[in-house]
Image (cartoon, rainbow, N blue to C red; front, side):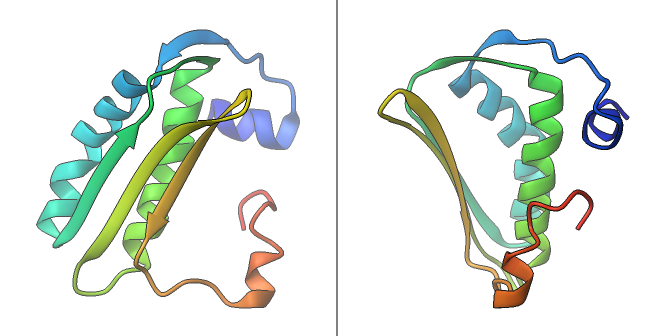
Length: 115
């Protein structure tokens, strides 16, 4: 609900708390890893060391949604990889999957809320 309020109503306060990225993604891996393995999806996570200030609960929702979307795009197993690395002064998280991908016209809409 907080994410919904933040996106739609833009009236939710965000709690920026320093978070260790490896620990954060270890928790996500623990949550989603068994389901992915059950579906024959090879899951890997490799994060460069970093402590980033963000709202961990909101970002957990975002990443679990992205991972779930990748899972849904695969048939009969596949690969899903999350990596994090420094790109200059920014920390970049990359999610790759071997799913079917998206149509070109859909790509232009992926930043729309609830698309």
